[in-house]
Image 1 (cartoon, protein in one colour):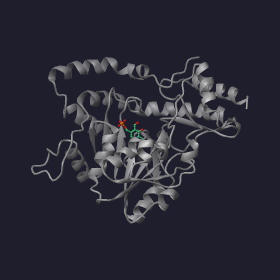
Image 2: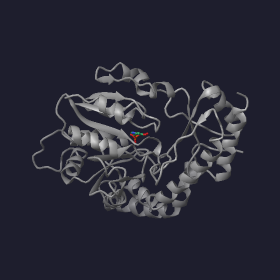
Image 3: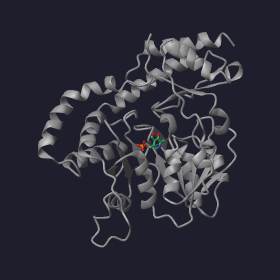
Image 4: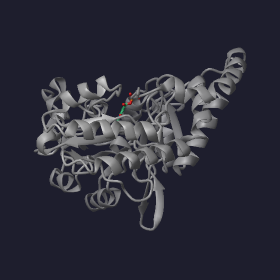
Length: 377
Ligand SMILES: Cc1ncc(COP(=O)(O)O)c(C=O)c1O
């Protein structure tokens, strides 16, 4: 059986007719930038996230950089972030001229609140949490720490569009909990565009206005007080994202169902640690990541090869924790704390196929192939 890791042509096919019709209209009305289509998507996405507003930007990395700049942090500030993330999170901090303080993750693969707490210094101004693999961080603990120490919180939601968590008896979407949320709409994301795209969401009007101004060459102020840049979500991406947003919850529900199939079969396998299935939709399963332990530890590449022969594509998110990425670890503005989890787990993690293109039968097949492999060890 063939099981693709990702199948964008399958996922995006249902939108083709409506999209091509709208594209034709856009092509001739030529509203390519800062159009009604852009503001319509921004409104829809803010409503979806439960935030006051949204600013569409060019990609998820820009979204973090612009969010950092919009927060107006003091010069020389330290920003704490997890070691287990896509390197864009750290790049954004370093490119904005701040110190990136790297801390460990816990069993959830997200930032460990204890590690976060122990990394706080008088120079710490902000925390970037990453809702990695689609799973919401322990935001109750993070927000308590932020409140106690007067820190700002950026939520990097690039892998968790639509994930929700209960905070003080209220169900909140990622992006609406901290001071500002950032998203990537890279094509493979839970909400993916047909090119690059990103967004910033917040409940603070002043922050949203500043972010929009930064992303538009600071042209929205008569007397600009800072140097801006160009980073905008264009009309084509906005139009496509509006169509796809309608199905985001259904796609996420399907991902949750696939995760349950993996969990049911793989929890029988002693050499595999399955990700926890959290209550509510606190995980929207951007990735389903298993970790090999006991006899299977150290055999990831063989398992990948075995699955490939069986027709199953897999990936690794991520092969190196941030402390091992050469250009980052040597950067003078990187401060790396002990990382017993992230730094050891990166050689034993494996991402299985998940998404709208995967059926329950395919997920059963993948999990059974892993069980078959495990009997050899
Ligand atoms: C956690 C995380 N942060 C940031 C980014 C950067 O997004 P983009 O590729 O749109 O710049 C990504 C994209 O993969 C991501 O997964």
